[in-house]
Image (cartoon, rainbow, N blue to C red; front, side, top):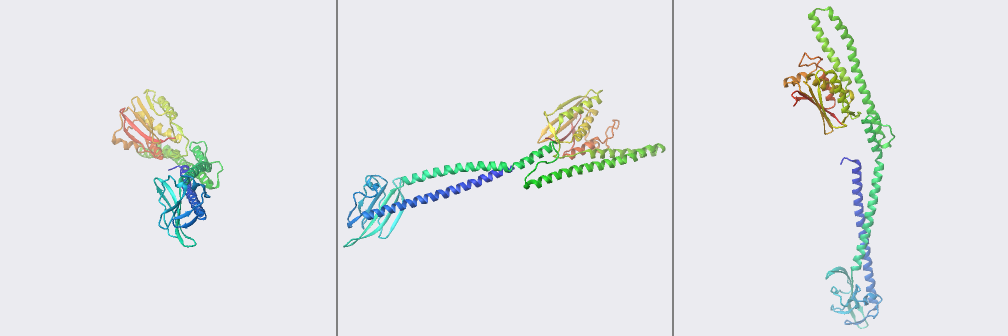
Amino acid sequence: MKSLRARLILAASLVLTFFIIFAGYALDRAFYDSAEASLQENLGTQLTLLLAGAEVNNPDDIDMPSRLLETKFSLPSSGLYAYILNDKGRRIWKSLSTVGVNLPKPIKLEPGKSLQQRLKHNGEEYYIKSNGILWHTQNRKIQLTFNIITDLNDFNQQIKEYRHTLWGWLIGLATILLVVQVIILIWGLKPLRRVTSELTAIESGEQDRITRNYPTEILRLTDNINGLLEHEHTQLTRYRNSLADLAHSLKTPLAVINGALHELDDKSRQSIQEQVQRMDNIISHQLQRAATAGSSSIRKSIEVKIIVNKISKALNKVYRDKNIQFDIHMPDNLQIRVDEGDIMEVLGNVMDNACKFCVQRVRVNIALIENRANFTIADDGRGIKDTEIQLILERGGRVDQAMPGQGIGLSVVMDIVSAYHSELTITKSDLGGAAFSFDFPSS
């Protein structure tokens, strides 16, 4: 995941999700335990009330008030039930609410023992509280077991409603918090988006440095970017100026030497003249290298169609006797991030060679392949043999000595193309001549 905002939102969402789940579980557990404790306390109260109202005569005879304090004991199927067992486990009293209800079997306990349990019976859930009692009368001690039974329909419904309300509120709260977090993240990352927009403007040539004020956390980053841009510009200018000064400083001595050649004999003059010409070619080559800007993301975009049309019109005038037909194929509004001087030099040299050696047709094909503009310039001339390719790519190398030129054009093209992390390739064209291919970064 490359997006910083997506990472932060995902991390915040995961943390919030775990927190909501944990909080929901904790609140649910706390409410459940509280409700269960309240249920147990209520059953204990009912058992105490039964003890208070009971009158025991013998192990098989017990009197209970006709009206108990808890009216549910008197209502059939009310959900609250009571049994009293003697020492033999026989029921000696049951509440009116047990009439017509199939309940779990009451439990007999020893005196002083108590039991609370939750169980299922005939698909229904019940909670039973049982206490073993040793009842003292005037003549004897009687062992009894009091059982209070309640169904859990109301209890489970209460838990269900609470959970529905709880998770509804938690999900709603989580949604609100997530939206707030997203808004905060968008606001917090706004300076980074502004930096990105400024860098885009620098790449397109609309501005040459970062100009806005930024928070302290990224101020050093923007200052370093500005320093890097200034250093790159200064270094490039110094490099180009140094090469240009060196080349120009050698021009004058070469001109003097060339003028003095007339005083020498023919053999000496020819030998020295060849060396002077070679040095002059080297200087021209270095001057062109000094002018090459090279690859950089900080570059204004150039519309290719304008450059190609300009060069083809100029070459039509130069080679008007050939009546050359240019076939130009390229995407509409294609732009590349290349120095204008570099693309003019490359296309000018390659298209000029195509016009020079063609019969009548020159084809310029430009295709966009993986963010690179792929150029192929082909002609219908005699083509280039495999054994000649290395020769023409060398500085000063020429196949046809009769053609005008110094033989450094393609060498310059190779230097410029390699500066943009590409290479010049020469193949056989389907038109019959040569095809020159290279590519440049597109916008």
